[in-house]
Length: 274
Image 1 (cartoon, one colour):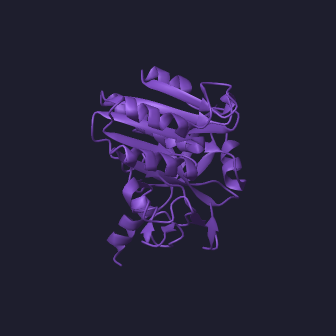
Image 2 (tube, helix red, strand yellow):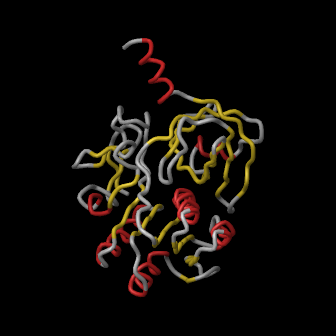
């Protein structure tokens, strides 16, 4: 490889230093971190970044917001690295690679967004972009309880219709968010459905959207070591699609031909039931 090509590869896949500008608690379990840095390209809704913090491993994180000189990631503290990210403070430095992957297609004038857990992070960025494009959006957000519902004020500021579901009934509909999907698909026509969150939730959403003849996209979370298609840790069996490069956003019809909703690989590459 020539020197010029080596520089290009580093620019595309190497770390960039980012400085934490602000940390905001979104829910009882989710924290948003605003990072100041310059990226070669503005992330598209649905793309992800590889984030590294000292004394921890590198992890893929969906972009929940972005501007010319900043990005936002929104994190649930589920492991050593994400817990460290939640503890970052203003002025701390992190390593950032990306943006990587295929994002959401925002074609069409009317969109239904269905999210739960950390998956709402990818969808709130899509929601903001849809609003900027003067298109219509209905946002369904689900959680176990009201204290775990993120970005509610942000969605309302975008002047979009918001429907909530909580398993304990503490806010909105009592039940799971997928209970809200079919009634609204019967009542209203959408050009597309986008979903991100727990995989069982996404499987149900994909099946309902296809049942009603609506194009559906789902954003997957998988264990990733590289982020750009080399390691194979995130492959979808049996078709061999890589979540990091062929996704993380996939057409729902394609996903139903894979182990979507059934298996994912651990750090050693072993298939584990979802």
